[in-house]
View 1 (cartoon, one colour):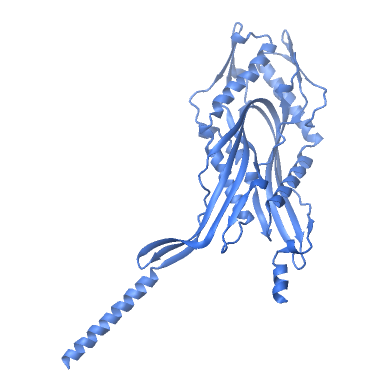
View 2 (view 1 turned 30 degrees about the vertical axis):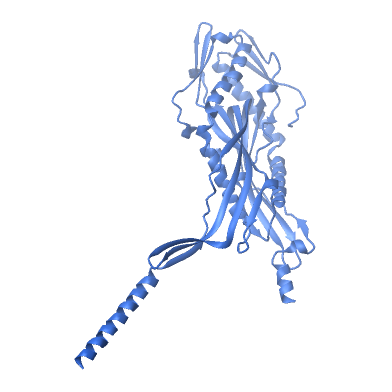
Length: 198
Length: 209
């Protein structure tokens, strides 16, 4: 009788230990399904190096919210993105004409090229934020959105008012620089040429 | 019939008559800033952003760490991009104190050049995606996140590009002809820069971010 009791106690203890081990194991089991979100390490390749001489007098940083809608039978697909770009207005020193600076005593006359958009590529597309998406969109749809954002930024920022502001600031900056160089009388003139960037 | 309707309504509208429309929305922010920057050097950079998105079962089971790739759960994307970096000298604080004259000799002390990413372009035509059977396509949010990482990788590579040395040399190429037009002899012109540049301070992350 005593032997039976010992066996029952031992079995009960073994079952309890097994249950405790199982509970411990299950409580410490963590399983997740996920994927790494980091890009791979790939090289950066320099495709060109260019010496330039561009004076920037006005920069216009712009954020443009652009969207497209594709109509379906029962529901519409939407894609909304925020594009970032900076339009830089100024003068390209490669367009100055010979004799663009004339000095006489403490007087100087500077003839600058017309104010232009210094770089036609002004959208930082890799900064773009995805605002809303439903439905599946292809690269050509994103390209169309980019072009739309480009047109809107040009229309919004490349205005006669902004060109005038860039021109006034350009005059002020060159006047200040020439005075620092020791010229008391500074005259700023602008070339009267048709510019492709205008 | 229900299945047919739900598949039409789940966004696969390319199979039905589609109509592209768009709505005009206002821009969010426009910031206009007057400045006096002389851009002297332009680098064009090409990079192919790649992402290998393997779905994995991770965790611990019976006190053993596991990390098992799931079958048919692979996704890959390759995004070619081009970026333009420009180095500039900021003349907004330029003054008489930065000029030294000694007889016919003139020395101009310039501030350190800085670098900014002025544009980037994703080559959408060349983007390639490979998606496993059990996976969904890359979302627009995922793609833009990879593009932002690629952009940051280009900014991080600037110290290795040597763009600041080029910027200093090219600044002289712009300013020396200007000073010779004013009557200075080329041999009497010195364009000087500060030394011991800390390039990490010179990447214009404010505009370049």
